[in-house]
Image (tube, helix red, strand yellow):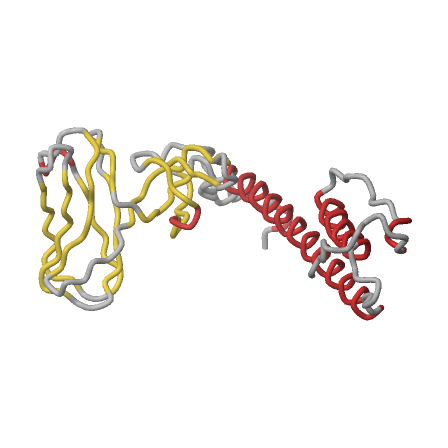
Length: 246
């Protein structure tokens, strides 16, 4: 859209009779107002000897409508995403107290055994879980030879002489494969971050994204209501009255 500022605005062109609309605080209206002002300025400053054709005005109004429609669609998409995030918080909130398996590269040890696992794409004859302490010391848990597929492991601080603290954790194999480590912890809380992102707090692991959760494993031992059905007891055998006995 070209605006020619060389024409005297004091002329008697048709644009002199048009008053630009006032500002609109609405986002969609703001875009419409901007396009309208630009179009009016173009009309006011057009060359009287070579005025714009009607088809050009139609094209510009069509473009304005398309931009407004895209802006409205973007607002609707943002509102839908925010609603989905809120629903996700409510849904995950019902899972607080459950055990989850989450991708993590660090773990907080406090004396309790931590369980985890990983997935090998190919078999390896030497697999190790390596924990790096706050002082940089590496502690190795050897798992020996492992077949391709899921591999589980345990981190027992007492058995491996690991003092309490935060440890980096990774898996090393003789094949060079570096699988993602997944640790099991209890989901403690769910909240929305300042950027609208859902943040999970997991015992022994810290904060994690919902995308890092790989499995929900049910309620932790002792946590929540016991949903195990009681053992059924057979009804007592009543004696048959004598008049019905043969």
